[in-house]
Every structure is written in C-alpha cells, then in structure tokens.
Length: 154
Length: 181
Image (cartoon, rainbow over all chains, first blue to last red; front, side):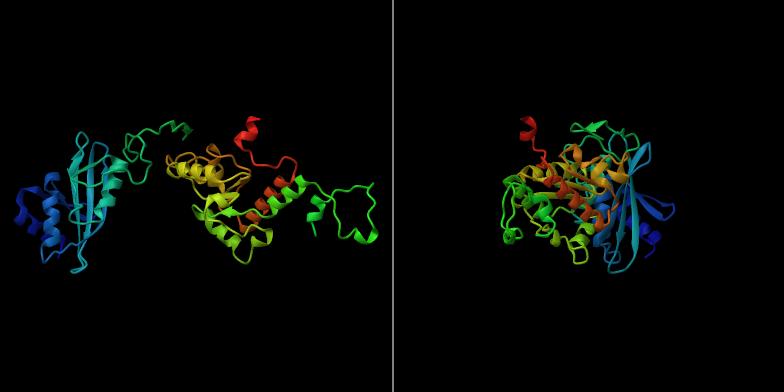
C-alpha cells in the first residue's frame, strides 16, 4: 500500500488525531501527540496494513520545537510508513508506543536520554547511553558543554 | 639462563667459585629475583574495550605470541591478575567500573594505557562529552603506548618496557600506600 492510501485509511478510521500528509524528502504522516497511541494500535492490527516492526524511533530538535519520528515496516506486506509527531519545547510529552512495539522501549529511553522527551506510560524511562547521574540532554540545540563531570574535566 | 642472567647475576669478584660450578651457580639478591619473577610472569586481565582490543587479541594469537614473554595467561578476574591493559575508548560511564576493577587488583599491579583513547581521549578529544580524556585521570598508568591502534609489535614493545621498569630499581607499582610513606 502506498503511504497516501495509508493516510486515507487512517483518516477515515481515526479522524481528528491524524493530521496531514507532508511530502518532505519522503512522505510523512503527521500525527497529533495525544493520538499516537491509537494510531499505533490501528497500524499494527489492521489486516491490510500489519505494520508490525518499528524500525526506528528518533527524537528531533528543530530549534524551536521538538518532534518524534517513527519508521514502521510490515514484514507481511513489505511496505513502509513514516510518522511524525510535532511537540512544543515547553511540554515535550507524548504517550508511549511500548505496548504496541516492544522495541520502542529502548528507542524511547534514548530519545529521553538525549532530548528530554517524556513518554508517558513508559515502564522504565531512564537514561540508557549516558551515566545515570548525568545532567542535561546533549542533543538539544541549546545544550551547553559542561566544564566537568564528577570532578573530572571534560 | 639466557638474558635473565644479566639482571639477576651479581658479580662478586671476591667469591671463590670452583671452575666447574661457574656455569651452574649464580649469585643474586632476593629483591632482584622477585623483580625478575614479577616481570617475567605478568598476568593480564581481559580488558578489551574497543578497537585496540582487536590488536591485543592479535598479539595474543600465534604470530606475535605474548605467551613467550610469560604474559599469555589472561585472567578474567582482577583478583588474579597483575596487569591491566586498558585497550580502547573509555567513557565516563565505564570509568567508574574501571576504577572499581583496578581497586580489586592485588598489588603489585601495573597498567598499560594502550592506544590514544586511553592516553588522552584520542580522536574524541576535545569534543566528545561522553569520553573520558585519558584513563590516567582515574588510575595511575605505568606505560603509555601511542597508536590508533598500535600494532601488536608495539604492544609487545610496551610490555618489554614495562618489564624493564619492573626490573629497574624501585620498579614497584605506584600504590597510594607507598606514596604516602
């Protein structure tokens, strides 16, 4: 199925949470933050879609806003879909999709570790790459390089 | 007896030794014998962190064989090893674990900082925030071996240098208690 058809299907099924189909470098379906959990469940369960693999979940910092990008793949139908959720800097929170795809567990931990994006409902949201007592989220555009960590110069 | 003689043997011109025993009797001190024993049987800990570990494995393999220097017995536990070859990039997250393993090694213990990442952070200096800029910020290092990665022969040379350091006067590891005296 092409992504335009997937978009139509999603629109008809779930209505208001699904926003527009953006054609960037690759076409991307933009989804509202509060609707992402329902969209994820539908994309995995629908028989003609069956997007059962979350290839990647990435955090993005656009300078004035955050985003989370999902890349999904279907092993049965061999088609791909990309989703994007735009977030504000004041409240970078959205529901987790860990219940739908188990691999989202570590992906969301990484997005939290590096960007500070909070995934509500996540079972174990803590740092994964950096030490547990690290302060700050380094991949943010406004992150400052600290002078030292635990007394050791950086 | 070979080259060990040069370090161990003490030449004492006054001692009368029978001609036929000169080849079989050697005069030495306990200190020198201990230092020779320590240098000739350094047991490293398996501590490969990154790419330098591959070169360390190459050194352990048959072509550059480290076993002929007595150091081929790699111990998995720090409690039984006396050499830690820090081979690879050290992140801040890993540094606290390295410190703990170093503390668990019994003395005399030695450290070879292998590769530029262990010396000063290597290619990740200065911009990487997660990389420790040199393992000597946490533990004392005996031999620094530059390279990215150093060839296996270079690591053998570093081992030789460490052996010379141990056999030289006061070649014990820089332990805090000794420094405090």
